[in-house]
Amino acid sequence: MSTLRTYYPEIEPYASGLLDVGDGHSVYWERVGTPGAKPAVFLHGGPGGGLSPNQRRVFDPSRYDVLLFDQRGCGRSRPFAALEHNTTWDLVADIERLRVMVGADTWLVFGGSWGSALALAYAQTHPERVTELVLRGIFTLRRWELQWYYQHGASLLFPDKWEYFVAPIPEAERGDLIAAYRRRLIGDDRSEQLAVARAWSKWEGETITLLPDPGVSDAFYNDDYALAFARIENHYFVHEGWMDDGQLIRDAHRLRSIPGVIVQGRYDIACPPQTAWDLHRAWPEAEFHFAEGEGHALSQPGILHHLIEATDRFAGGAR
Image (cartoon, rainbow, N blue to C red; front, side, top):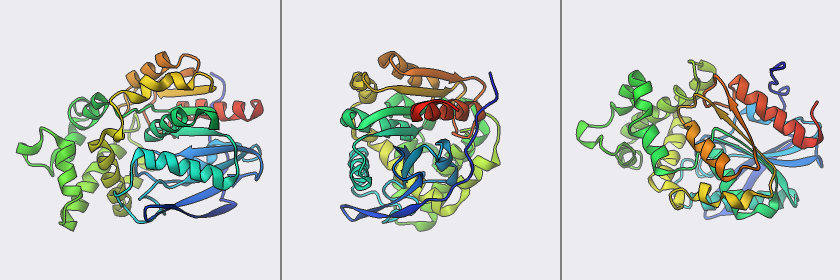
């Protein structure tokens, strides 16, 4: 492989604000790059993960005009950690509201992890609005995917970290850990709510890189971050994304006319490669890359390399 591509230089937004999307929600948005350049939207993970500065840096700022936003209930969006009127389809509608706000007829859609699921849901609903799809760490909320990570599967690879994850839940309730966490995350006991949010968030933060990386996991230990992340993520998983099991793979035929790139870490524990492979089989027109020796996180060098190569190419030629 040639020299690995990495992040573009740090960049600050040239505009930002809050958009009232109805139902009592306002979403924080920001724009980076060159006004009037190729439009793109970045969809963060979680759900409930919020934005981070490095997410701005996967696009050439001279050739892109990028909209990033905190999805409902997380980051700087308000109300904080709110679950009401917070579903996949509310977020799909928010993406359309933001597209109209920036005045783009069409745009490139970039999403990783949960963001890949949201990108697929949006593109399958509004294929005429999507010029290209760039996806990594594919996640589609199928029941087996959720069971693998939150019940039995990933637990066999991280038994030490799994003990910490299950510790807040009594033995009698461990047959359905997502449901057991739900009861506590929406309960009235604030101290218990925060304790289980920390445990939920820590599990993900410490299992998304192939090797321990405090630069990635430390963000998951912040109490505010953990509370929004755990409550919203669990809320979506209890409801299986408000979609049919396997819907995002089933409806991949709607993407046939959209140029796409799928990037998957070979050793992604959070979102096992089988899901990316299933999407590849259902949408063979998309370019597919296994990042060998990599886990799940955007920052993994091989994953980042393929993603930036894709955004460069879709901007109108590699550099």
